[in-house]
Length: 315
Image (cartoon, rainbow, N blue to C red; front, top):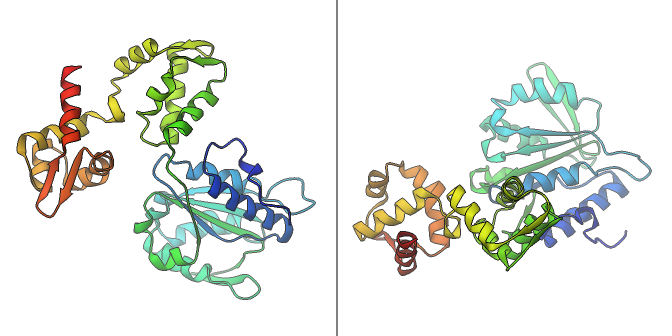
């Protein structure tokens, strides 16, 4: 087998370890017609769906001219395993080759997770039968490939995770984010190291880099120079804050600065947010950037967080 160089994803910035592994899977499929059923894990906007599609759309056996059909399913749209059989298995899988991407796998219904535990435990011939109502379907993993993607692996049933080869995508660093922006605007000249300023607000997120490239294109056009002065104008117009914080995160910091220390329940009351939303959507990034801390006694702002508010208020 040829060396597993990441040529399949040559246009993908970063993610070298994941690219090598997924290119290896693609080479295995070319030779044998099989690859492991896999789970791609990354933060929201981290490129997991894009990477899965890139691999799935290049799965073809040696001598074949095109890849087998590729179907993407958002798991939040699945109500139960019966719906999966009626809408996916019967029309798309019986006696057919197909690759299926189960996106947002943390949203799989419970009966789907239980069914997949059986389906993804094939015999030595790489096959397994599963029945729903009057249908008995032969799942043949020489013809069927399952891929899953999630940003919340802890919500996926652990036994199902054990059935899958896990691929973790790395968070993008600022240099990689800047490269994503510049690749999307090949005829724009970024001056004065302005890409460093741009990438610093993108929160390690590839999707945010794509969106920012679109904003720059709408603001500045697809050619010419983009300077720090233009960036300052654009960020002011769009309300972009240092480190990419949003207004609610600033509100959280301000509430902590005023309270000194408080519980999650009190913080929710002060900000008007639910406790679950605060924990899920805002606290993680503030902790990551060392702007707030959480310990046994509660939540509090850090010295860096206070400095942030001083700069914010002085702007």
